[in-house]
Length: 213
Image (cartoon, rainbow, N blue to C red; front, side):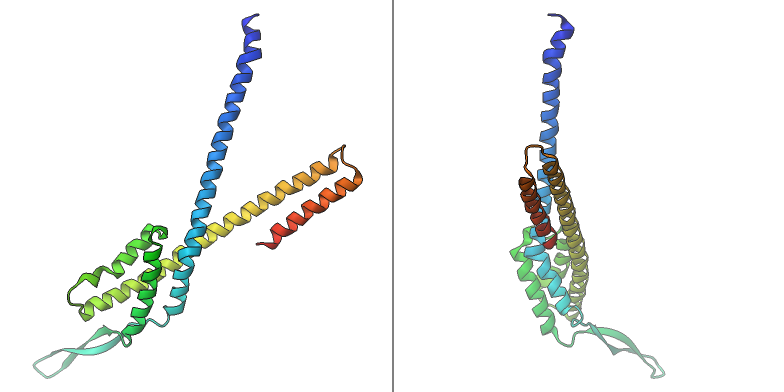
């Protein structure tokens, strides 16, 4: 048997089979990686960020840092100089909001984004102080408002990424089913009744996919 024939009979088919296997393995790995990423995004939304976003909407406009004029100097002519000083009218509302947030975060700390965790650590940075001055409290509340702003941003990104991915999956799934409908219609082994039955079954699946948006 000549060398060219050996290559044609054995080497080429083996190479093709190996190449095909590698492609399938890589494709499967990419699909699994994508599915894992979607599953994590879904868990982050359901178990943590939905709640944090709700807290931000619930409290954000109620949490107000007010200011008052405070005398800080009087010159030799008796002229008074004032400075605006921040203060909190109702600290219990802030405490309630922060406590609700802390409960959700510490219960699902593994699901929070790194940048959001950094913002949260800024909120609780002064909690270890032996004496919590008004300045420390004000800084904590300002950090909390920044945290809520960051949470709304992260929630929007996660929500859009997850639902965009879901829409794409639905679109691809519908395309796949329509291809099956086309193949069933051209199948010479199906009777007219069988073709109708298969078409109706696939149409039902498509309607179900479109319904669950």
